Length: 347
Image (tube, rainbow, N blue to C red; front, side, top):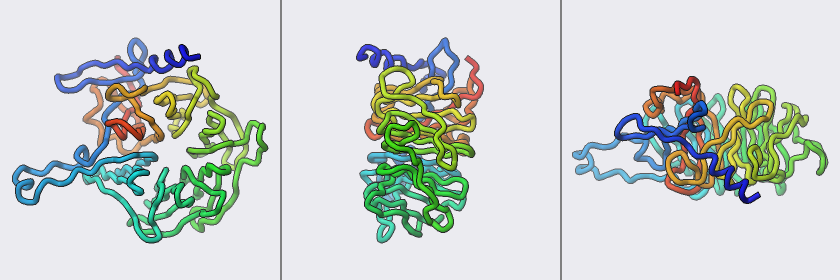
């Protein structure tokens, strides 16, 4: 088993090829296979986002302090903005790609955060933060003003939140998936209703992703991902415990693209595995940190179809990028890895 684990991790090696004198390109899988993922860049501090001041302005007003991403967990991208939950900051980093701005969001008063794990924004640009310390989902409006909070009960510890179909879907690490009305914030139902030992039971839900047809739940307690219908009926399981390809030891964040391909971050192997809609393993990328593209205790993955234009300069000219994939790393020099799914490879 140990030898298999070593093979599993080492097989994530990538191919580096130089396109000019200053930059090398990282793709997965390596040749001779067709490349599907390109590592584009990483984000760890404000200097990588904001426009640099002139030397004269530095002399007059002083150099602006560089703000760092401390210990990221959840990440969400929408309409030109990237929201990063930072458990050390007790707040979020908010990156506005349209304005090249990087700001800390540390709310006070009723909106104060204790342990922000994951977040999501809806069509109104309302921000929902899953705070495992407050044991609540904390809601802010489009101006980041506190609106309300959901939960607070003894057996409620939210670890993820997703807004879809006019509902707020919450992974409660202490007991299933809680579904609320988006407008009234009232509880609608909780699922699943299966008993321990049954296939549909969730032992420790940590992350979720909702599509037009399904709810995907990362079950850390049983080392797999379970798929349910929108009304909470069990459909299938993807993965299992182990060190073979397609298995998990520490499944964390999950994301699903428009083709129903499932991305699963594994904090143990420090990789991200990709499964097709039938649940078969397609590929994996990342690997224990040795350099750009690798991961260091990754915890969250998200998919973004809206903001690819802001990362075009990193795309190798032989490829076209269909969508972005963000992965957060709690440790190491690269706190947020940015990858692109290659639409047309020209190897």
